[in-house]
Image 1 (cartoon, rainbow, N blue to C red):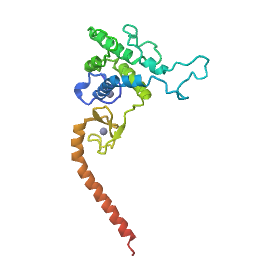
Image 2: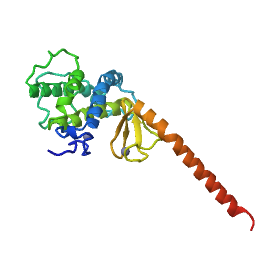
Image 3: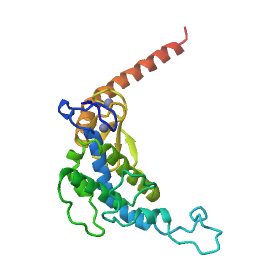
Image 4: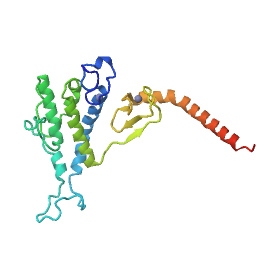
Length: 238
Ligand SMILES: [Zn+2]
Ligand SMILES: [Zn+2]
């Protein structure tokens, strides 16, 4: 079996993870999305009404009065109808309602494990069910589709609610590949290296920062002093 993650194509961090289809980094990303989805729902509901701005209503100019709600948001907030959306590998076009997408994946997981999905309740979301079964799902080939579809739901919701997470570059270099590419992102429990994919908890990063930054500052200071001395010497009259 390939030892690279089927989603991000990076090598697994642990030898013991070779049986996994998706790496732990991608698992953490999905876990972050699953935590975010219930928080996006009230924001989506709040975005449902049209602002009344000219760019918002596509039906402006029609004879009948336009629906005063955003159709795209209405679609995303649609019901999680059990039994009608399990064929998510078909040619469904457009984004499924958020809860329908979540429900579809929860039932796929339950089917694959030969278990009963906890009974459906209107308005219930199954993000926690998916999260609890994620270690198993990450060993299955369809985790790639789950990643794509749950990610798409989250990105569509963020675009509507204007809640793209902020990415903040960190100043310490990556302890694994030395690149200055460590980034922290809202709602993600890890600082991630954009070059090698290393994940550090915020505590691990803080400890690393404390170890690596003072010598780096001293080196930078020595360089600056050295350059200043060179410049002064060049400027001195012969
Ligand atoms: Zn991965
Ligand atoms: Zn790195």
